Length: 161
Image (cartoon, rainbow, N blue to C red; front, side):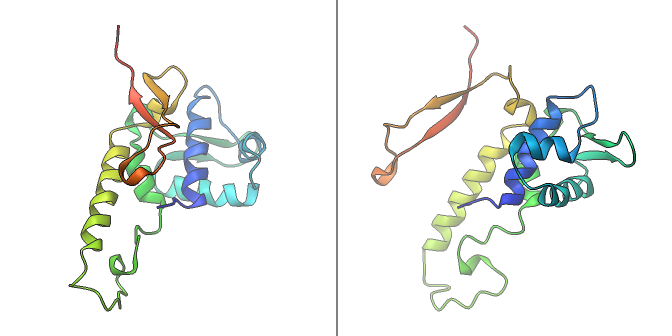
């Protein structure tokens, strides 16, 4: 599964803005910081505003800020609100014409994987992505998962000592 560029940029934008709560942030500065297109970021900003994740202020001195505290912005909810669909395979779509429908177990396997993915995202907020959070990236680059596939890294909450 791959998230769209829109979702990637939306999460980057939210992290950037969350780290600067004392002021309004502009599309131009975020685009420059992440070396991404201003016009694409404008679409992302518009969508985040429509979904209620950010507030925008127009005009001279305008910009954007979070509409909620970082701890109140659930990552799963953000991804669901930005992604156009989660049709991992044809049988997930409303226009399904797969000849295996009703005879294939892949739908259940992939559906379970998608539910696990979203449930994992639901366990985190924007606050967890900010510097100083209690999350640690654990490099598991040498580890392998089921089927011998490489696992790049995972995220875990740090436990107090």
